Length: 294
Image 1 (tube, rainbow, N blue to C red):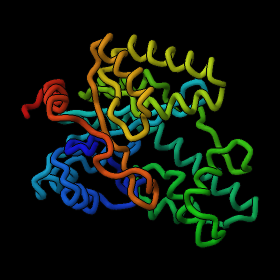
Image 2 (cartoon, rainbow, N blue to C red; image 1 turned 120 degrees about the vertical axis):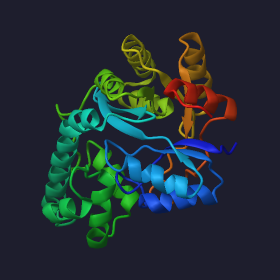
Image 3 (cartoon, helix red, strand yellow; image 1 turned 90 degrees about the vertical axis):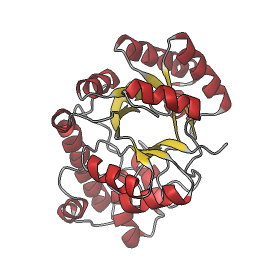
Image 4 (spheres, rainbow, N blue to C red; image 1 turned 90 degrees about the horizontal axis):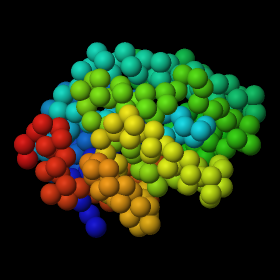
């Protein structure tokens, strides 16, 4: 199914392939009517995203995807708002952005030590821009011309503990409940992103039995902290996970959210715009939760 309301897209501000102007143009070309460009740990350019979307007669809902750590696994929490309190987001994400950039510096150093690619971290940071986190994708794109290892293969190396260039999230990373609290404080609603991906990580790390148990524990913690929704209609949820999370959403009266998690055909060629999203009825409930009218 292809959706017209895709609430999970990325631009070059985080780890997408294209600047926001191109993302909006592609959204229009692909028939999307409502989008959210939810860049990782980015509080910048909400106004510009909205302006560009309106110029194409598309609605952009301000969104952010916050990277957190749970049981040494990466967990993402989405935040949406009609209008965020930017000073709150900026202050709350400062430590995460600094931690991301410190991790990037260490990855760059390890690449040099391994003889794969000698990169200039300061140049990478300058090109990325102030107040923006340097992602694994950014580093991989800089390293590729020097080592000729495909960008997506490099990214996988950065995520493998046995690769020699792996750097885990440090104490700078929020836990998921802190992300929920930050989003609420900034005037938004908080949503657990692509649970299928999270369950997969937990199972690969701890095995099936513990992985599933830890996921249920994560959900319990998030419910205690008043999370508002779960990303059900996601390109990263298989039918079994979707059914399981839909049951949780209905039992706990959580908002059903959806998005493709599109980054572009270079970064994630397997994901297309509109591959995840919301139906019109689901969008109406989402708008209501934000205090907006469809």
